[in-house]
Image 1 (cartoon, rainbow, N blue to C red):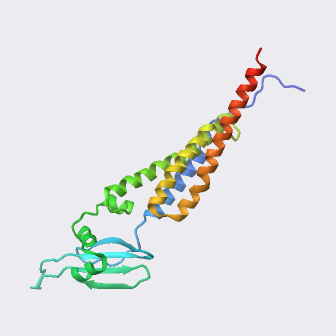
Image 2 (image 1 turned 45 degrees about the vertical axis):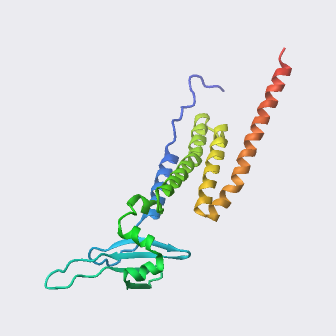
Image 3 (image 1 turned 30 degrees about the vertical axis):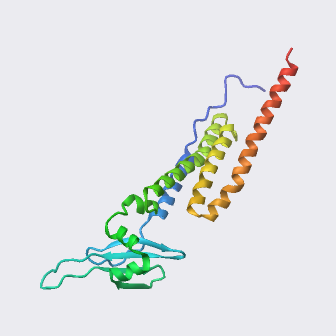
Length: 222
């Protein structure tokens, strides 16, 4: 029996995936940029993250301060290294810390040359900022491919992979591969190596299929 006058209601865009993406992005950003466990900080002290090979910690610099209260002596400049395992080295004089890290690194810390952008990107120059910006661009393209795929699927209400997905995958993967090489990140390099080849191969197969379909259409046309 056929019932006339009825039709399947149209379904609108499902925004649940977008909300889940936003929540996951905020969670990841919070974990990545959350401050370290707070520690007592001397008056006027500055802190800079320190990484030497596998050793990581925080370099604490206290500039020379004028006498306060009844003290007639000026507080000397001091440096302290607090390692992640809870141990520390210091207080050290400028000469001692320069012998460990080099004068250039100490000068950058004490002169304020390491601005907030350098600290956020974990770089020491504008050249490094340019590389990180390139990495962000590659990640936006690489991550945006899933937005494109999701929108294409929502449009036809079935799982669909448009050609633009593979092009965005290839471009983003190449850029991220270069970025991870600059970062000396072996995990990132390994993660993108197979992708570059596979995405390029899929594009090649799609173009070959398109040419074959065009040729068959031309042959069958009157």
